[in-house]
Length: 212
Image 1 (spheres, rainbow, N blue to C red):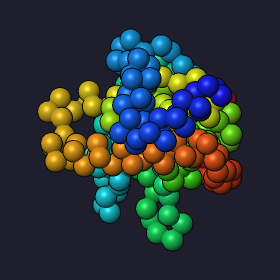
Image 2 (image 1 turned 45 degrees about the vertical axis):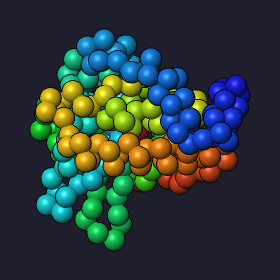
Image 3 (image 1 turned 90 degrees about the vertical axis):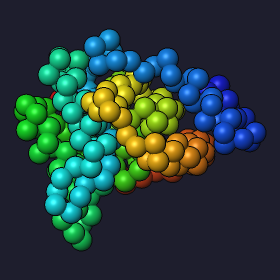
Image 4 (image 1 turned 120 degrees about the horizontal axis):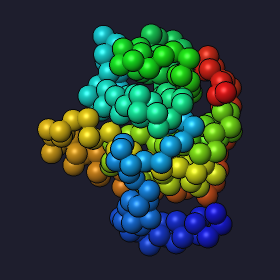
């Protein structure tokens, strides 16, 4: 763990692009297909945009569908749905994710909600500190998996990943992917600083269900 943090720090000092290349190299080997991923007790599904109508954005639908597929294949026993909920409005990513997961055949008792996953770092930190998750499958798009794996591993979770992109054979628009790729360069830099500084997010449980 200490060596890992030192390597991240060194790459960060040289170049954010080098850091991004390092995370791709370091964690690419931990990304599996849904069929070949090793079984784990829980899959962590990261939140994304939910439209005003309550409909999930395409990327979030794909994440939840991939997570539901893992549950239905018997790869995991629980799904941790982590995302942002706004107290002052009806915006609630985990609740929308739960509705969609249940529509795909996942029973409510298999779903854990974390409404305080405001950032990927917060979601990973809270998965370990609040829900006592020490091993998991991470589910998100491929461009995001490197950073999520870096954070979870750096925070003490034995994690592997499954890319949700397989749910959408036609892929995403090239414009969308370019934007996300450049965003990930900056976000990975911020994530590396977070691993070094270790800020503590809220450790409240919210309305979450508990693992077990």
